[in-house]
Length: 142
Image (tube, rainbow, N blue to C red; front, side, top):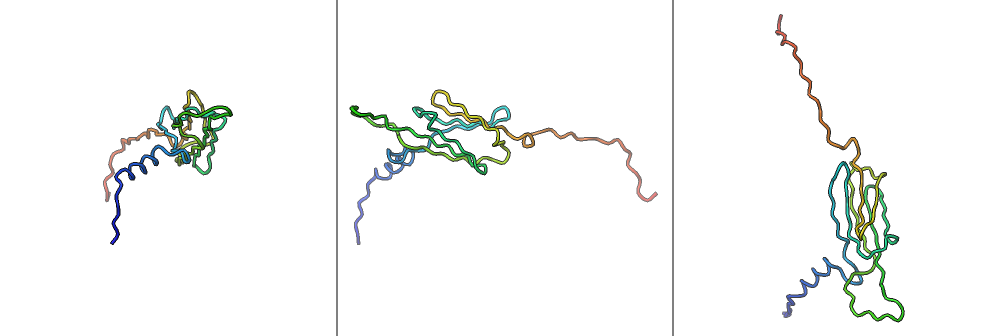
């Protein structure tokens, strides 16, 4: 029989690494998504990320966002604290068939990358008119 010692903080550390990432493997970029005025809108938080390091790609309705935050250290600079995640961040979203992936617009402001994807016209809800007839019922058998 083998005695195993249980560390109550080990599971908490593992969960913390999954949510917040590590220096070697940063966590996924946080995002919000909503629908507004006939568009699907997605906003990614990318503070401190140079927009030139962001790569957007759509293939078969899969949107891939990659961004890199590089190490700020330079020669003759001593890093005192390092808590901000660095490295390459990546996020994939599966887009529905109702979105027009040919007309995606991307905008970066204040460290937030916002994508606007129009909903296809045929996918938008529409009212269907019901017609009424005023014809008399016909008798059967005459």
